[in-house]
Image (cartoon, rainbow, N blue to C red; front, side, top):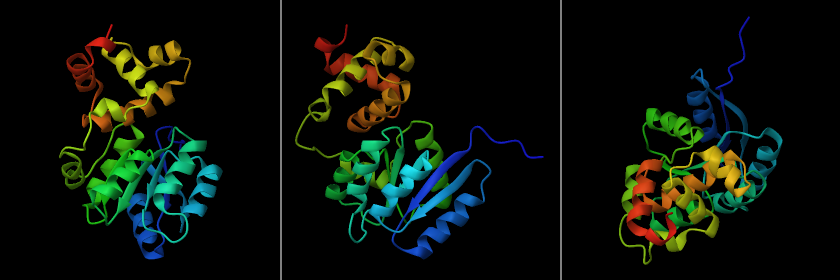
Length: 215
């Protein structure tokens, strides 16, 4: 008798091309730790399926008729802020990347990425990290016209300050009266704004750039 796997990562596939969804379903379904729980052919359906299945990760296409991937990302996260949304698209221009990440996506991959990179990104997002295709990261590196801290919300800055003070996510959650999963979601957006991959790097950045905010 097969024991249920508590570490199983559940995924919602969103793409308006059925063949793309079928290919992704086959790829993810061949793993032992990832299970596709639903598919959606558009943004409206994605919001509905996310509410029905509560996936850990959503693989989100951007260009779809009707409600596009950016708007679908906003709507899903408004109801389920703990869901990790990874964009999977053919577009790597700065505008689309910025719109998607600004809507709350934690990762951004291009459809010509290697299958192994896609699987790694799903696992990375589920673990609270920020998977970005190197080509996309390169688009974000040039001057964006402002300081990273200017793009952060007051709550994100609070979380960053407490990370710099050495507090763990659970302690930060208690201090701010929010859940540990919400803390992780805020940290994911902070990491993305700073272009870092872990809390140590974020803390070092805060000490160097936010001395008035670090106790």
